[in-house]
Amino acid sequence: MTEIHGFTDPRFAAVRDVFAANFASGDDVGASFAATLEGKTVVDLWAGHADAEKTRPWEKDTIVNVYSTTKTMTALIALLLADRGELDFAQRVAHYWPEFAANGKADITVAQLMSHSSGLSGFKQSMVADDLYDWDKATSALASQAPFWEPGTAAGYHAVTQGYLVGEVVRRITGLSLGTVFRTEIAEPLEADFHIGLSAEHDHRVADLIPPPTGGSIADMSDRPLTVNMATNPPINPRDTWTRAWRAAEIPAANGHGNARSIAEIQMVLANGGVAKGKRILSEAGARRALESQFMGEDMVLGGPAHYGLGFGLPGGTVPLPNPNSCYWGGYGGSIIIIDMDARTSFAFAMNKMASTTVGDMRAYGLAMAMWQAMA
Image (cartoon, rainbow, N blue to C red; front, side, top):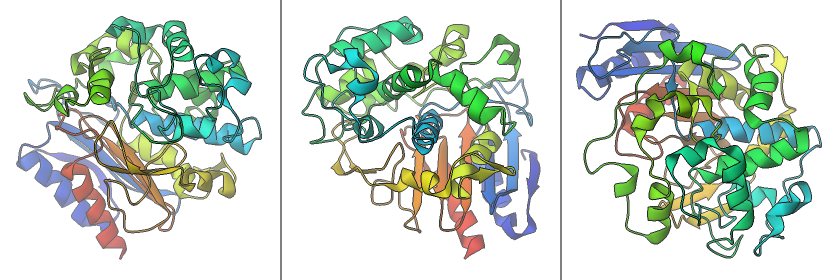
């Protein structure tokens, strides 16, 4: 039996049982789950091991690369700047980033970047993994290329590119990298252990991602040209996340490092009307802007139904959510954050054993369902 560490409010004891069952079945090697309710952390669990060989225990302060769950942190910074009046989602991207207007992109809005509908789901020029660590190269490539489709007419998941696109708008407004703005405006004030650009001093705490089974990688999702481009230019390889180069870079769509506690407590900001840990980060109206519907229909990259707000997935997409004023997003392999503004709760799951999924799987959904059942 895997020993489960942490605490659950007695009301949510069943959540601990579901968490333990994921280890008993072999679905998890190392993982964490946390939940907040009405501005308080009510579940904080961790267990297992930080490596496939099970030589390193998953500790309270273990962190892991959570892939696209990182996007919700990038979105939070955009919402923060919008709340302060520094960023207008309806404004053209080229207003902030003039070079972006090239090749038919003059009318693309910031909202279209946030909702995967700008036509920039991948890179057109050939890219290698190291290019993702070069901010100027990645953003210049996107600024110079033409969109894959007419912006605003369709959506296709901007799996890696969204972070550079939104991040460069943030940089043009603030003069600072997105990782720096996130650290100073969100992580440090909330004392949250989440990093976009991880310094070497934390390497000993990072769990190794265990790649999904053969045939279950992101490159195996589909033979659609847009999907192939997203997954292979450059190739998305979980073993890259073990390297110092990956960890040190700022890839604001994909290389955030944290655990369930830090993710849930940061996104408590949205769940709790703009306030977390006694600090007001956003106005309540500013927090609720995440729910503003931007696109609903078939995602041309993911190949399924999607409903996108400003930086988050909304009810009506691939993930069923019981309350209408909810939003979520997850990362390649299984990490996820769910924010339910009606119930004023946030749930987060972060793990190292990757499943064949891009946006959450039954490990996290089972935990979320146990939370909602306990609150019913």
